[in-house]
Image 1 (cartoon, rainbow, N blue to C red):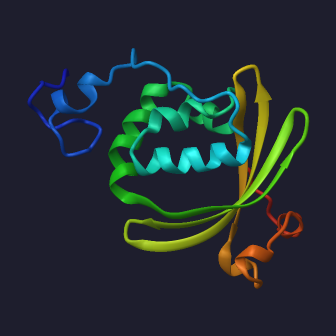
Image 2: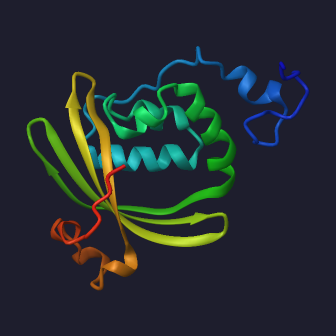
Length: 171
């Protein structure tokens, strides 16, 4: 069944369909991501994009071979989820890049995130992997470490903290 223009948007934003996803069809242009951004700058840009609800930028900054792109092969599906439940339930309160290591074709960035999901605060560290493409660096995957799993000060964490994690899950 087709959603009417004045009905609530099916993405869950609470806005009318005509003021939300109707205007944001799959023909929405791809985001412009400056090709000279370093991986650390891309992390900051992704956090800023999330805070302003620019889920197209986030999607477009993923590497085509990323696990995320396997989960969301269609851009529009992620945009709808982002503009719906993510925008409603998730907040990035702080994003701080702590370390960056850039190789010829691969880079990694270690950063700290303070977030709120459905009113519950959380602190994590992320070790993200980036791959170089013709368009610039693109986000491949990450590994999370909960803040309580690292006893030192935030600034003291380094790459080795992630090597010691028993269940290394990359997403």
